Image (cartoon, rainbow, N blue to C red; front, side):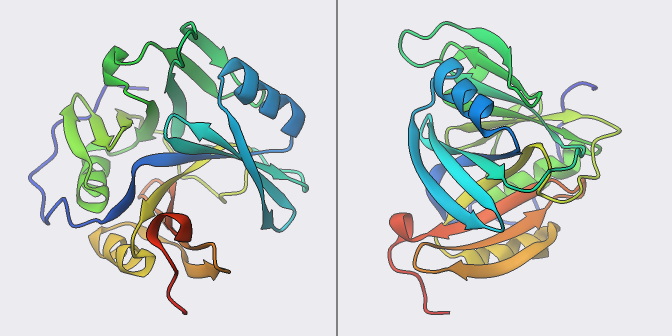
Amino acid sequence: MGGPARHPAPLAVDPVAVELAKPCLDVGVYTNNHDEMRAFYETDVALPYEELLRAGGGVHQHRFGLRGGVFKLNHSRDPLDEDVTCFRRLVVAAAPGQAPARLVDPDGLAVEIVAPGRDAVEAVAVHWGSRDPDRLGRLLAEGLGARDAGDGRWQVGTTLLVVEEDPVAGPMGPMRARGFRYLTVQVRDVRREHARLLELGWSEGRPPVRLGDVAFISFVRDPDGAWLEVSQRASLTGPLPSH
């Protein structure tokens, strides 16, 4: 993997147009190895378990608190394929009394625990490989209102995205594969934001769909195929529109 992104060209649109419903991103992984993965994140990483959601299609989503966000451990009943991912590493600020550590989860993802504030990590950092870091930086700034923190780092609320040049990043295949597969941004109007992201150069992953009274969600993808879930969750925004 190469070095950090170069400084991007000036933004083409207002970078604060997005309406975030939560000032951080959530992390989504898929696994066939529920017991070991849950023990690792609950014990070694010290993430508090919150709830189980039945996501359909034989997937149970186990949700953990992630320093203000959510770590989504999606356990699939059906065997998952191996696939490349653009999401390279997860860095988590240590909880009180927790020692820094460099770990690897049971499915092979590098996870680092750091002292809060180290390398500008307030809560969580995600290392994201891209064949074109300048382009991805613009998409993050224009699409998510990410603030340029320099040296290829982009801040979305308390989440730090570290964009690193990688000529073999992607293309990512289906979202349901083993490992770190997607990020989630919580917004106030999923249909508006989904359409706006497509206009800015993200590609269609899945169009918006309503999940009962819980959420409206959609998916978009960056040019390397990395998955971004766009979610309008009733618990954050109030009652959902009827259709």
